[in-house]
Length: 403
Ligand SMILES: Cc1cc2nc3c(=O)[nH]c(=O)nc-3n(C[C@H](O)[C@H](O)[C@H](O)COP(=O)(O)OP(=O)(O)OC[C@H]3O[C@@H](n4cnc5c(N)ncnc54)[C@H](O)[C@@H]3O)c2cc1C
Image (tube, rainbow, N blue to C red; front, side, top):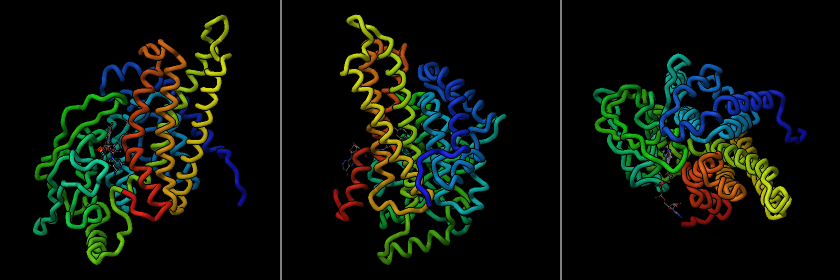
């Protein structure tokens, strides 16, 4: 097979289409929703109306055999505005969990309910992090206990920092079924709309991505039908039996979700970085000091050259990981983590440089680079911090259980 890096026609069309929405609808609304710190429902609805927010879109993107559709779409959407784009994309994390661990029947039942419809859009939430279990997923305390008599699972515990937590129609919650097995004793459950016992905190106030809802989620005797265990009881029992025998579990629920979503998250970071870079480039061509545009100084021009080079390098890592993930190539060197690590660090460095290139103007809210700088920081933190990505890569390349 030949090797090439051109996007095909479908992917180019997708890129243009999402870019049009990002430019026409998302970008102009960015500052307002950042200030309001509220979920931008009207914008989510606009996205739903044109088919950019909905399960058909996501399933279509995932079915692209090259794996590139989702990263390409994400980069454009987040180029528009990080906070609004996260409000639109947060649901994808819940969907990825259902897609990654669920049966085909569970997919058909729950994925559409994550989105609602254009008349009444809904959101989904993936709740894994806990107050005592962030990077250390194995420390999870939320318990799921099976009630054989009623064929129900009972969930108790607390989740932290969940995107769309408490306001979601469908929550996907990870919980420990057998704490003695650590992360191998965990499973993921769908909590259907309106289930009693699940309560969200009020929206948490954040540095960036302020349009996106983040909240803690409390689970108090939450009863869900047996059919809400993603993957089904038989598969879980088999997995637990293997783990008890000391065999390597095939994949764990939360880890599997992260594997699927890391390149797509990296692409979001690249979108924000590219937006900041483009803005700074234009500014540098127009801003005159000492009688000439500031870009005529190597210090500024070289900074922009580095920004562009880093963005393109990160994108190649993201595309590679997306392609590998879609084509079931094993991540023998932690390539999924590499893509997210690089993209996150590039987004932070590039947006910071963009603020610097704008000088005092860059520090003011009048210009979007200030917001982009705040938005970018999350990409070295969520979906596994940069340190955790390095841990995954270091373990993969060395075979040593680095701590
Ligand atoms: C805006 C936002 C949205 C989020 N959305 C979701 C969501 O939808 N669902 C969800 O489940 N979670 C979500 N999270 C949680 C996020 O994934 C966690 O915050 C993240 O995984 C880090 O966990 P922590 O905050 O507990 O940090 P900690 O794990 O407490 O880490 C603190 C510091 O210690 C470092 N560290 C920890 N262990 C090691 C180690 N072994 N070696 C080296 N350094 C280490 C970390 O890298 C970090 O720098 C969200 C968080 C935010 C802020």
